[in-house]
Amino acid sequence: MPASKQRPFLNWLRTSPIIKTLVAVIPMTWHGIVIGFYGESSGFFDANGAFTSKGRTITVAVYAFVALYTLAINVYDRIRIKRESDHAEITKYVLERILFLYEGKLDNQIDTFFSAAQPPIRFSYDVVKRINVVLKELIHCIAFSSEIEAENISVALFYTFNKKKGNWDIIEKNYCDAFDGKIRDAIMHDDSFARFLRDAAGDFYYLNDKHKDGVLHKEKDKIVPIYRINEMDEKAKEETGKYGSIVGWKFTITHRKKRYIEAMLFISTYGSKLDSSITGRYKKTVEHNLRKIILPYFQMNFQAELMHLYREDSLVSK
Image 1 (cartoon, rainbow, N blue to C red):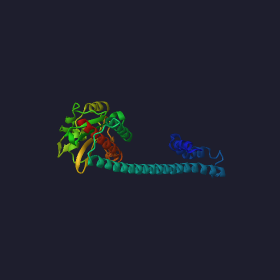
Image 2: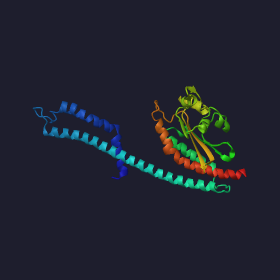
Image 3: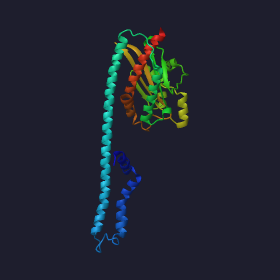
Image 4: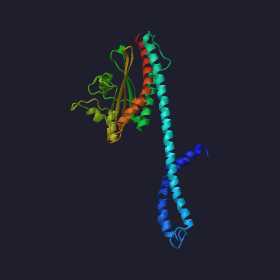
């Protein structure tokens, strides 16, 4: 039988509640009912109450079936888990090598781009639309890893070029702010998460609960808000009882210690937290998955496209 036909059948045997129930009740049914009530009349016992050859053979067969089924399922599960683990390790290794190649390629591009005067250029594709596509794919990855609906996830990429002297722009998907669309307020206001991330020493911050960890953020036993609730947060709270989570991650493009591009990426969820457990025991896992598995691959795309925007902006500025 082809493997494609075997696997569904084996999976059914392994997971079917009917099969599991039958295997569990067969020993009890055999001993409690068949042997207990019909043992002698069925020829399983002789007149002295001892097993006949027939009774012994069938009883051994019943218990052998249960034991073999249990053993087979355990072995199958071990093989399946090992195979899935091997596939995951191979996938992880391949992605790491691809990331290494992209990092090397990007380093060369940065060196070439900023080492010599590059003429402004208009690319054959819309760079902003390309970044929007990358943001959309990031939403899909977050949705897949967290099981949160994509429509309840927003992403926003804030960026600025050194020649713009602190003026920021934004490219976003499903984004909602609490500052009436004023980018400067979103970056500069005291209770803005973007302001907090921009000034923070670290490059990655994750608030699993926007209200508890952001609005009620404490520093030295004093509440110092680092997040402002927006309209989508309020709507999500009314519908689900939860505000959601937000992640902030910043990176720069530098050359010979000179910073040319600054960027901040925000991932926000509405009505569901990235770690939905009551105790928050998966928070470190969520952070690891974002920092080490998901975001590094998107960073390569963002950096490359922001460099393209930088060159196009030089054309517009002239």
